[in-house]
Image 1: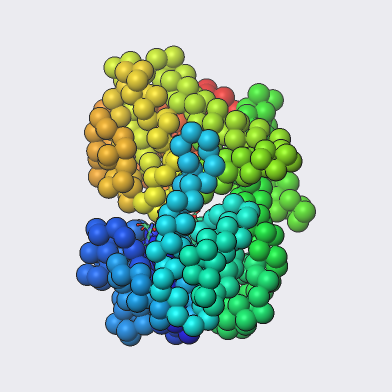
Image 2 (image 1 turned 90 degrees about the vertical axis):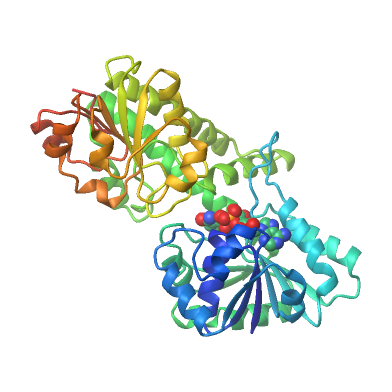
Length: 437
Ligand code: NAD
């Protein structure tokens, strides 16, 4: 089985590495010269646990190659995956499909023999049909079947998610394509992951519905957390109590500064636009988007309040900037709202992040960059945990306190034991765990 993976980003690169590890031959194509230079030198351009080893093993075995040349890779492939970005379009919030369509146009002249073309990118319902229409117009003779195969992996645990998915979802109405996709995913089916074949429209919409539902769960627990603070309940206890109910489940019930990342914000926005266009508005999801936007602003205000009502001329230590731990991805991270709001109000930010600095630095000017939490705490009036990297959970708070000028901790991820922090004489503000004392 020969695969052409178009796009070597978080999804394309992880998928390419995992497919090659199954034994398939994968040619991964990307246009970004820096990314390609890294990959050709055997370096991963992204931080993803376990990826370096997987790349090294499969490049060495000759099953995984990287190139900028789409044509030969398409001509040789049984399956062409489109794993390019589908960012939020400026202006209307819809998914920007220009990368998908330009990859399709570029690939069109090169199809050779029966080829499955499948989106792995998250694309709005109807995109497979539109790809088919464009390909038919450009290459009426091409023997291609267009499928939808949305990807559900999470950054930070992408390899585990790809190799042990809850399900593989394939949208197709073509029997030959079904056979090819069945063969391709056989290694996962043998391990017990169901491979589901559905209509293309169902597959496309299921990806958005899944992300919107998870975003809704996060916004739900964030609002319950606020309520907990007002009535003296503890959101951790509430979440763990309701999470035991299997109809609810205990995942995605962690309150925090609002969801971010490369998927939820843009996918929620795109679903809202699709639904409005289809005259079937998803008003619950519209509320989720609004609530999440306001949440990020409210988190900055929470820090200002914790600092005594003003952060002017104050120093704030910020631990973690990426949208979640175990990734270097800064797309739509809550820190991109919180940090500038504090800076605008006159605060000096001393920040650290185990992997995020390279991407965060151009996005967050004016920060004093630190290599560790200890260094960030030096002279800080307030210390804020924005991203729950594991290494922040085990910090020596006494040592941190000794470095700080002030004594306030704002824990937007509830990584610290509130009582232990207070026992040290620090003032603690967590999420949904009672107000600042
Ligand atoms: P990304 O921005 O990290 O990577 C996209 C890559 O595609 C880039 O390296 C870019 O240079 C390349 N590219 C763009 N046009 C190209 C072309 N014509 N030819 C070759 N390469 C081209 O994006 P990502 O995070 O990997 O996301 C890709 C898609 O997968 C998106 O639709 C996203 O919504 C979806 N998705 C992402 C995740 C995630 O966790 N990141 C999870 C599930 C689904």
